[in-house]
Image (cartoon, rainbow, N blue to C red; front, side, top):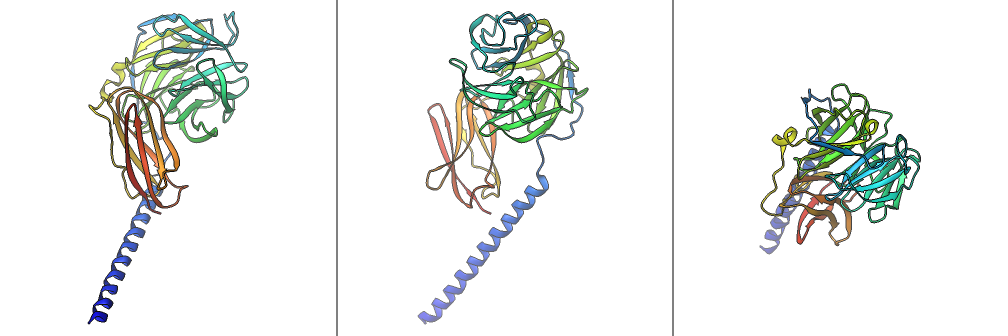
Length: 371
C-alpha cells in the first residue's frame, strides 16, 4: 500500500514539475517575442508639434561675452564662455546668480574651447569641441574628475537624465544618449521637428511624466520639446530675440528656461510652464516604490516610484547575495512620479532586489529574471 501511494505521489510531483517547466519556457518565449516585436530606438516619426510664441520674461548680460553652454544645479546657473567674440577673460566657467546673472565664482576652463554643460545632482559635465572631450568636473573647483572622447567628435551642449548624458555634436541632426561610465552611445534621437537644422543646445524637463528633452536649434532659432514616453517631438517655440541659441538650462520648480545667445552676448529668461502645464507631473503625498512589471521578466522590466519633494534619488539593483549589480538612478529629482527600466540581458537568471533611497526613505523589492 505504501509503495502504491509513493508511486502515485511521485507521478503527481513529476506532472507538476513538468507543468512548471513548460509554463516557464512559454513565459520566457513570450517575453522574448515581446522584446523582438516592440524593440525600437528613442526616436520615431513624430506627429506635427504644437508651436508656441513666447516672449522672454527678462534678460541679463552674459558674464564675459560669448556664452555657450548653460546648466542649473538647483541653486546656481552655470555658464561656459568660449573666449571668443567680445570676451576679455578667455575660456572660463562661471557660477551665476540665476535671477540677475551676477558672477558668484569663476574657474579656468580645463580644455581649449568650452561648450556644453550638464548637472547630474553631484557633478558638472562639460564638453569642449577644441579637445573633443567631455569632462566630469568637481563643482567645488571645476577640477577634472574624469573625461572621455565625444562620440563623433565636435561636442556642443549636454543634458543629464536618468543616469545618461545626452549630447549633440554640432555637425548632425543626431542627439546621442551616452553611458557616462564608458562614453559609449546607448541610443540616438534624430531631430525631426519642423524645420530641423542643427540641434545645438540641450536641457531636460524632469518634472513631466517620463521626462522631456528640450533642444535649441541655431539654424531656425527655435526651442523644441521631445517626449521620452512617446518618442515624439511635441512642442516648438521661437527663441526670438535669442538669435543663434546655443545653451539651455531649465528649473523644473518654476518652469524657467534660460537661453544663451552667442551673437548678442546675452542670456534670455523664458517661462515655459504654460507650454507643458497639461503634462505636469504632480508630486505624490508620500514616497513609494511599486512592484516591477512584468515580473518574472526577460530581459527588461519597468520600476515605478514617487517622491513627494525634491530629493537626491538612487535606485540600485542587487543580486541575491546583496552584491551591487547596477545603478539605475543616481541624481537630484524634483517631487513627482517616475519610472525607470532595467535590462538584465547581461545577468544570469535568478532572484534580484531593487532598492529606492531618497532622503531618509528606503524601500526594497524582489524581482525574478527568468531566461
